[in-house]
Length: 389
Image (cartoon, rainbow, N blue to C red; front, side, top):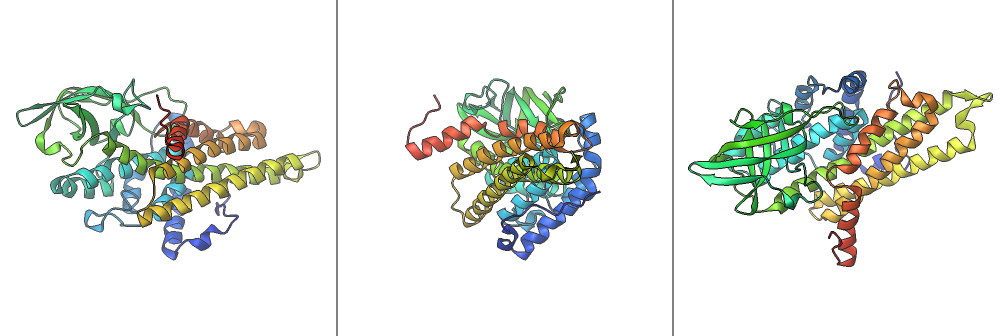
């Protein structure tokens, strides 16, 4: 099998530390050994490769930026981005699993949780012994999460939770859901554990994208949540949006892995595919496509690199994350489509990863804020006018 050696036309590796390069290469090797050989089978079957969860835990891929006292690796944000980049070269569903576990479950528990909640959940989530999911999106409220109708009501010793969430990664296999609900009109975070009476998480079937990922509904029918399971430091919708900002950071890095997989596949194919007595790579039209792909990958890598360094300095703005998420997802999908063209008829079979990445990226471009919503987030920042209404 062709060994993947990365795509780095602008020598961005020279900007990375030895530790960052070692982490990146460790995950790259893991993906080549553990993900690539099994992912097409899981994509066909619509199943998640459960066997890789504990291996990812052993490598320290969950909650990588959180403190070592919780069994986490305590790495910087550039390292975390590189981890997700390499995982998405394998599959968007694998990266989604790690994004949710890290950015949408461990991050809110670490940021908004009690000491008891952190001490109990974070070490178990770090190893993959426990799996988490994040319940914000509802059947009728995606881009407008503030319209949510899931409600919590205070009762003796806790809360009663009623409502439903939709499009929840990991939901059916999760031991814990971080659920956002309105309590007296204020959005609060709750830890809903598997087995709580009235809580069900049926898996959503029929997906043509993210097939190697578990996507679920979460249904709450008078679910009793004990007092100790309220995330005590949550004070409104902005806390849930802080979690999404963490996830968007990871997506912007992740899709570069999908770009690299598609480009690498198309480049190698074009050099070996002979038409009219020479490789198609020797034709101007193919070269134009390859150069476009490589240029967009390089631009995305530079966006990510600076975004990661700004985040490590603590001065990254959420609008800057929106720019990287918006640009990189759009260009990744474009690159997947162009790679498909270069592969011709072979582009539609799963001997090659391109069509799977293209299908996955259709979802990735939409989730954690659509292209249009990120346009308006940046638009408001630069003009001072909110155009959401």
